[in-house]
Amino acid sequence: MDTSQSNSTYTINDSSVGDDDVNDIIELEEEIEKGLRPVSGDKYPNNKPRAVCKKCSIEYVAVRNSGTGNLRRHYETCAKFKKRDPVQMMLDRSDGLSTRVLKFEAHVFCELLSYAIIMHDLPFQFVEYEGIRRIWNYLCDEVPNICRNTAKADVLKMHNREKIKIRSMLEEAPSRICLTTNLWTSITTDGYLCLTAHFIDKGWNLQKKVLNFCEMPTPHTGVALAEKILSLLCEWGIEKRIFSLTVDNASSNDVCVVMLKSQLRLRNALVCDRDFFHIRCCAHIINLIVQYGLKEIEKEIEKACESVKYVKGSQVRKRKFLECVKQVSLDDKKGLRQDVPTRWNSTFLMLDSVLYYKNAFRHLHLSDSNYKNCPSEEEWGKIEKIGKFLSMFYEITCSFSGSKYPTSNLYFPKVFAAKVALDQLLCSEDVYIKTMAQKMIEKFEKYWSDFCTILAIAVILDPRYKMAFIEFAYSKVYGQNSEELKHVRDKLFSIFDEYNLITPSSSTTSILTQMSDVGSSAGRNDNSQSTLNQRTMDMFKEFDDFDNMDCSAYVRKSELELYLDEPRIDRKIDLDILSFWKGNRIRYPNLSFMARDILSIPISTVASESAFSVGGRVLD
Image (cartoon, rainbow, N blue to C red; front, side):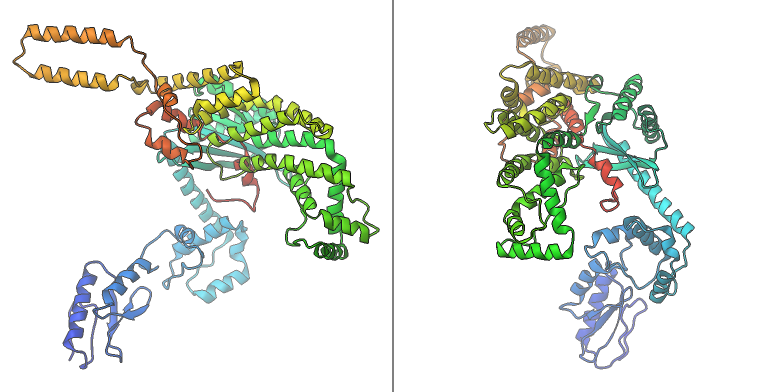
């Protein structure tokens, strides 16, 4: 029997096929006509029809019990059938290698090649390597021989497409934009500037986008930096939407901030009279504070550092130290960490590893006469005390230094805890610890006032803390009813009043709003009743005036006051604060708008600094 149809997907050329099989095939064809995978099939020796995908040549059973199910599952997974973005294909697959299709497409190849060059920091000359071209030709004869100029042009096209996407995101974002910036000098002494934007998009997602990574010619003065940053902002069209700029403590940055403030003020572009525009990098401040305190234990740190250097100085010493580790029953996988003098957190990690192997170093001191830098018992005691004390600052530094940072409401409690700990150490009976705490608190007080206000306002916008936590924290630091607490409250209401002026259509929420709505609705119903005469209407109008005079005695509360009066959420709840404000944006339209801007403030420049690290570079 030879059965065929003009539009049939299957052709059967075997008389042994029964009517049931033909019905199966017809039913399968009907499913295919509804949008399933077009396939072609042949009769196989086991009397069960099998299908072959025209796109990827995968074979599968096509009988009644499993044919259409196989087709549907194959429809979802067939890499060739779906026309997908090649870059997204690599991002979506965990292995990153399962994007191969049978038919070669040149434009997809060029897209993937451009993405690989960017992802792995490959030189454009990579496409001209003879070995690479041989691999490509072996895999497919249709692969074109691309020159470095073509690869460069393709990468620039991809860059322009991504730039258009970011520009669109910035235009659609309802919030103001916070910035971080930093300078870097390459080994060839070329200067570069990185400008990063932080904002909350219309879906209430925290975004971080590198706007510019560009050459910054000398001199790197504050005036030159301000002119460069302002020109970049104008290029993106966001110069009137800036909320804050986070920089480190370099003197040139102070001049840059003053210049930018004056320029943006002329454009009437800053909120709250520029009070929150300049944000100092908290990670840098913590580094300065701890480095200042560590000067008191330079001798102990130097001995610990020299001990690590001695062990790592030769393979013979490493083997001897590992033998000591085994003899004192310690884990040799933890390893010794070496110190980087300019980064105190590396000093803490070194001290932590040295303390772990303290007994091993003691054993090495007894067995190796050349090892002269083993700390004494008194010095070991000092290192242990400092290690416990610095662990808190290490945790703060890690939270401040994350390139994937949280919202700004989470920082104040940690900084406050550090402030309280330093104050407590000032009362320590240990003269050694007390002296170090005095030096650290001196440096802490120098910068505390620069960032405590904006961080305090950010934590007030967290419904788990609100004003109660700030009152508690400031009472611990400054005492009850301090001027500093009053300053925070005044700034909070001042910035909220300014946001009310920005969106006057919903400036305040009255506690009598619902009553007013009911009254106006009743008035409309009364007007619609033609049976009421003019005298009755005048009576009702007189009643409305009387009621309004009576209600005017009640205090009208703003959105901020209503928010602060509501009970706090349990502090232990793992709250997504952006989801909270997204869900309450109808109740607090202006306050949520203010929260959107403040919660996106970055309190460190790590987001910009990370762009200078090739190993940590990420395509945003």
